[in-house]
Length: 400
Image 1 (cartoon, rainbow, N blue to C red):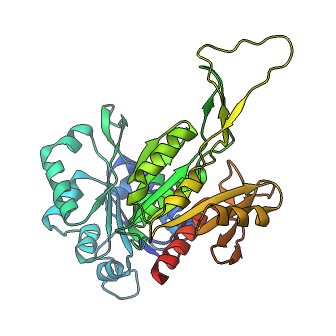
Image 2 (image 1 turned 120 degrees about the vertical axis):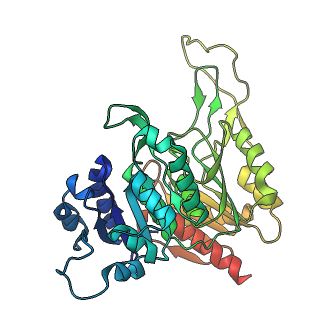
Image 3 (image 1 turned 90 degrees about the horizontal axis):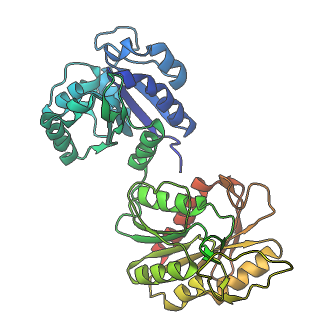
């Protein structure tokens, strides 16, 4: 999912973090949003309206009483136009005004008139942020439905160290996408597996694969954004857990097996995107294996088949989606896996296809459905594919 056809009204208020608004506007535009910017007079002291006009492609509004625009009550027009209303950075002053209904500039008057979801990214000195009055004002706005993107900790412009830095624009952009998304998975529970497993040979070495977890994490993030209660059973990866997702970290295939089957009864969708090791060493050495002259023979035994176990245990109403990565006979092998493991969908991709496979930000897949339907999809980002998979699962659920 991106922000195509979404109109985002971004309000920039007066703080040093105002310069980050340029990055945020750029990110929103890359997500295909139409962006309209309102700046307070104080914000114009930190970054020029021309910068944000150039990036947004729209005139920046700074003055309630400007006559240099086609006639319309502009704050009402922008308020109605907004699909999401964002204040980033948001000062303590504007927080107080928003909480108590004060409307004395273009930002606060437009805010008063909008019914769009509200995303607020505070930025201020640590002592100001922790002041009980500011915290109370934030709570008032939360109770009215505002979503806060919490500031980060670090060295502040004033020289202090603590919480108060505006969140990274990438995080704010994600919050805007979440606010804009249809909450069509609200009330559903989604279990996602991601990443590789590791099978210990000794205290130093293990058997594993090249999975980075990007596909599974993209699915978990998309499901949470769309309102689902998401459990992410994840092997060892270097990715941050998406906002609103409950992560269950595991290492081995047997640990993943136990975690998945434990969570299984409560789930509506089970999406097995992890690359699970099929085999493990028959024995794990307690001390480091020392190299010797000649070759070494390693005895391997089968790991439990998690996807097959899920297919055998799935209850009425549950939908199961597996992944199949192949290097040859893609459709034949994936169709056999779909049937033998009692899945509803199998997402098949060929490791040798450009833009597919481990570690990439894109994927090229064929979707196989129970009943024989085969759908070849073009190369797309893993984020787009994540929403596509969820769309298809939801379609089947609604048709039942």
